[in-house]
Picture 1 (cartoon, rainbow, N blue to C red):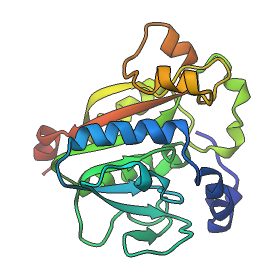
Picture 2: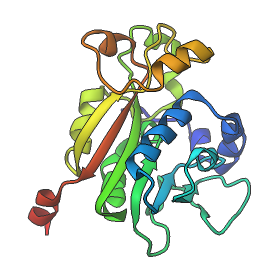
Picture 3: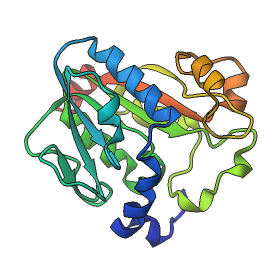
Length: 226
């Protein structure tokens, strides 16, 4: 694990950085597809941890009630809470949720990773789902990624093992495959890769950009801890 520069942990930095994610982009669209499929038309509550400008809300079906937490909220609203999720406990009042999403944040959680996963576990209702992403730092062209901005660099299998201490990993798969270590932007490539939800031997290990993990509460683990 690396020590990240303090500038990447500040509200002022993320107020600017989050502006890059106002418009829809590939990983966000794929996340929305996954969440809408999980909800399957049933009314449910979703918490978006590290929500940025809350762009995910605009891609969700109407049966999903959206809530978000982020270190830098641009437009305050009743369903959004501003807090430093690395330093403060992840919670939204006394609410629990059917779905919790954490996309693109665990690369920044460093030594608090285990604690943050436990906090999210406590937010999930009994049959809830946790949808989380993590960067493939073993990409064949990983040198194209600016590692200096992250403080939590590990192998995908190590991150999966950390998840399994709090959750049951039901399904995990790449967000996309790309030689340039970035999400596809061309319409044809997006159309091809958006519905793909499986690992491809060798190809995924070398060319996956990010991974999605769809997790459930491991009730047997909770019982043992209690």
